Image (cartoon, rainbow, N blue to C red; front, top):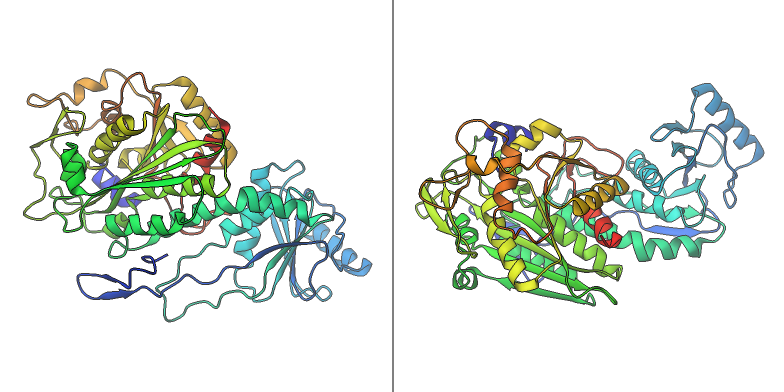
Length: 522
């Protein structure tokens, strides 16, 4: 995706059981496919026999391991190996040992001397990825208290994710046996995991599954169906869906217009969750949901276009965050809006130079159909403002190749008019491990997007600050009195290589960040 975004320099789990099959242009995808089973996560006072052992280390000293069968001679062997390898327990360090006692493998994972919740989670994720090919059960013990064991378990849940449901040959056998976190009072960690971290891991998994699916499986209508299935029976949740006829009646010309070149009809999905004691006015998370982006008439280069199945990562993130908040019964009020369309070229597609009218009544000169994400967000933001009257709006989108050139895969770009909102998002990004970098919005950008025949045009001529111009365009359709921020995640929505909490593939970036932000109350 990154190379394609850079070359374009512009915009940037199967169907539920009720849907028997997804029909494609050249065949049928069976709905019975599923990802490989993941290890169940358990908590206990004593380690099961015959398991691989993970020891979370604060430094080079082997910690007490109550509940783990490790003899004095075995401890001495591990201590000698630590000294021989100069293992220091720093965050991210690992040391793998075999042939010590009855444990088929002992893996030491460093979390540092005063590990944060995030550092402990990363230790768990590192362990999951190091042991993904180990067939036997896993025990985790070490330098953390009972409650902090939940952080490690959460990281393990994120790190063991895999998307392999369409493999029929050379598919790796799933691991057998649970991962058991050992502590003096396992009920403390078990409750913390069940109430806080498992719902968040579920939200990230939903987001990753949606974004990893091919576009012949996930398109606007099936995206909605998958989300309905995920939220079924969840207290405090209401779901609203607008089809094209409803959007036309509301004057949503840009969201409908982006999808008019595809036989897959556009949709606007709104998932509202209101927890006990939450404020009347929600915070709105509005995500770009282009389920496949060919560029439309302004066609993208062919190389790498397959990654454009992930151009709905913003929409996947907002529904994933809402799922986490709802399943954990957080005392917050949020509405997650997904602006869903497929951007394809055909005889009915938008043409460069077309004029479209938004729900707000403002008009757009559409000069490039590959700058479509900002178009669907213009209507989605207006809809959420009128229908839900939010106290703040946060957009999230794989919007521009420009942000990839500026920040690569280290940060998402943050654009905001409201300093308090910007500060809260920056803090949430650091705490969650999904970091943001503040980018400029300047009033002079307005001149670059001025149209001679409409209220605004969707691109500027020539070279320019593409990410900032895209953000300015979106902000043009948000009332100045409403705190608003835009997150450009084009460089971080997909991982080219694994990190402790993010296996290779679509990352689910934004779920952890938005969950953390919503809970902060800012």
